[in-house]
Length: 311
Ligand code: MN
Image 1 (cartoon, helix red, strand yellow):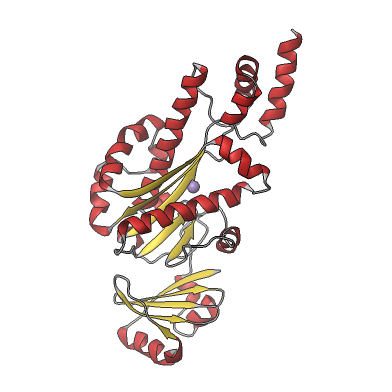
Image 2 (spheres, helix red, strand yellow):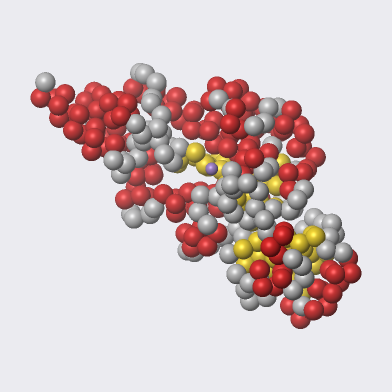
């Protein structure tokens, strides 16, 4: 699936409206002029002159009205949809997850709405270049961000994660379900207000993402864009990534209290060692409830445990 945005004059927009006149649909979001629904393409025209083409036929339809190759150019080394030029200054819900590569601790997903008039405030509170953000820094600024932004944070503890995973659900599917749910929550909280866009930090391509969601009752599709490194494209995603991390760290603190020492992040050999230690001291059920049991770390820890026991 593709997303293409063209910048057109109001005369050109009028031509588009006339051309697809039979496929016009009711659309009333902020700044929207009109919407068109074709079998494989959704077209949205904005008062700003932007026209967005979404769907399998986006390239074909957009090519009728502008130069697609020029506008579809991606910014350096990101993958995903082409975003409007002034994207960083728009009202956006962003979503991101963390904890997916960590043996210990939950998968957490956060979605955050940052309307245009709060972008500066959020930056002021410390959401800057995400690569410079340490865990300690994120712990410090997250509570303030939660006071000023509308958000949803979902923490999937590992007892539940293991149960869902054992039923044959991939981690990709689990993530997609959580993103969809978090976005739904935020949309409900801000209604009747709507964001101009929703940006998901891309972990799967659009088609795969929506395939994961195909059995869901309510699937968030409207104005949804995907991009990798999305935290650099809008502060809403950067904020979501901070809140997801904050929730992850809080859950790691809870686990640390149970075992009496800080929990190792990631999935390295140190993690295997710690897992074996917890297994020996607290038993398999306790370890299982704290970990993503299907990770290879489990078998490595089992081997270490057997050595410990035979010593
Ligand atoms: Mn991400």
